[in-house]
Image (cartoon, rainbow over all chains, first blue to last red; front, side):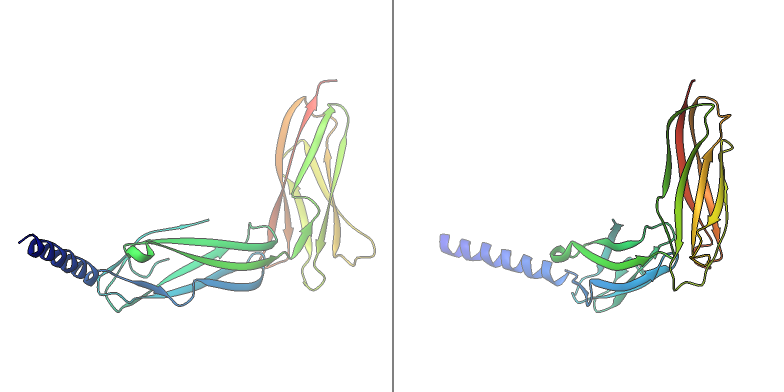
Length: 67
Length: 158
């Protein structure tokens, strides 16, 4: 009886983990670093970092900061 | 700039980074952008942009400091302004916002208007106390039509 209870708890834990994983987003950047090279002072540098959500859940961008 | 705050499964987004270099000093630049997400395995993603900022005009100092000189005595400083050889731009004028300080531009001979001496003079009739101001230098550059040099100092009593 005790063995069955342990098995049941393990099953529940695995199930909860699987459900959690199925809602997890996964952000993927092909490039996280760009070297612009030499620019003349006064120019505006503009570059785009594309990304994809490879996970099954909705990806949320919570905050963007910079140094 | 972010294309969208929420991205559905399998969809793409983009983050556009803009860096205005007008007021940045010449030399290497390394900007880091930190993205916080609800992706538990990538809660924070760091992006980086590297560049080298090349000045069109080099200046020997970005701030002019006057020492504690007694009022009644004129004091003079110089800043050398050099246009990079390959740039077809000219230095046009200089003006100070501080009425206690006068400025003038003198071409350095032999450099074909590519090198100027900015002469900054603190007037003799200054009253004792702290003074500061900005010197605006105008150029023919499209990217950098003007730039600023700061000046400050203290005149002491006789």
